[in-house]
Length: 491
Image 1 (tube, helix red, strand yellow):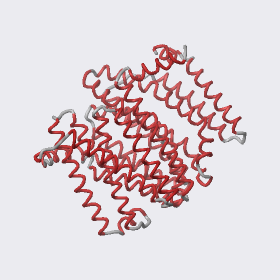
Image 2 (cartoon, rainbow, N blue to C red):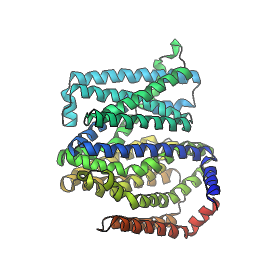
Image 3 (cartoon, rainbow, N blue to C red):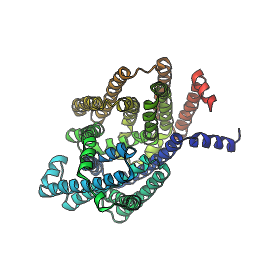
Image 4 (spheres, rainbow, N blue to C red):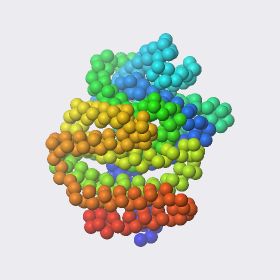
């Protein structure tokens, strides 16, 4: 097969239907995000001490949590009601949400300005009043910017979404270089760069909405519509915050017991762990979710077949990607990350396995959402977060960031077990367990071998050669499994 025909075949597979097209564009968008984040990570770890990077990581937790509170999950409410509403109703919903976000922002911001010590109490360190203003302006423009990008996904505009994300990242890397290298603004450069990036995207969003959803005076605000949107959105805030705690609570606990420097080192390792989620797991879920919702309402048998097929190959594909990642990860990490952050490499594999298991839990969790069992989602999230915090409190004082990584892995294992058990009761799916166990064990053995070579004291060329050879052997071994061979022949 020629290279030209192979490229045409790949193009035909990727763009033959909306799901494949959306996945490819969302994945490309996330790939850009990940690459820019790695570039920024290398830039900031070169200029900032682990203490400053740890402080920045904790401020970012505050930014994300406060954005959830100010948003009120109305972004999600709007998405749910988008196709159920007329254009006039969507117009009123959009501007009602904008005004509500602004009002809550003013109240929260004014509260922190009135009691400036409250921020120090929450974070454990003090910032200047002008830095606090940057933090809150970042929060409000993040809310508005994300509303626009979320709209592009809901409206099935993956191309516009891709261009917007590309533009956002170009602004982000440019402003980061200006603030950090030229103006030498220190850790606040990170917040200023994101502030400018989200501000520009928010302005683009405002212009778009004003043109496409030009409001009449009567459509600017509706108290009744706000109540309906809040009825859907507010119950989702606790679940969203709990998910944030699941991801971020370990850093706060590490700060208490180990200090900001360890938070910084751990956060750098965690960023590399999130790469697979950014490149593959998250965009796959974004593209697949609308399709699963539609299938469930049309045919539960068809839905069960799809879920069975997805989970059957999920472990093999994702762990295979992780193996490829670890072939070059150690060398890349050493190349772009400063030496004082190097210990963060040791936790990447543990956290990454946890994130992979969490991705499977999210895929299974779609059954609870489409079956309208959302209360169970909150219950299982609560149990997982409580376990995660408990394990961190037990393990971090003794084992530091390694204990935090282990707590992450164990928490996601529990989450998957809970969701799998419950969704099988809602809608029993016949999974090919033998195939899944066989390929997962095989994949993990190859992964362990590749990671082990990374710790050998051998030359970079020899290390890359051995790891690359193992990955090729892994691909040939998988291809000789009958089910995988049959799947490949379909394409």
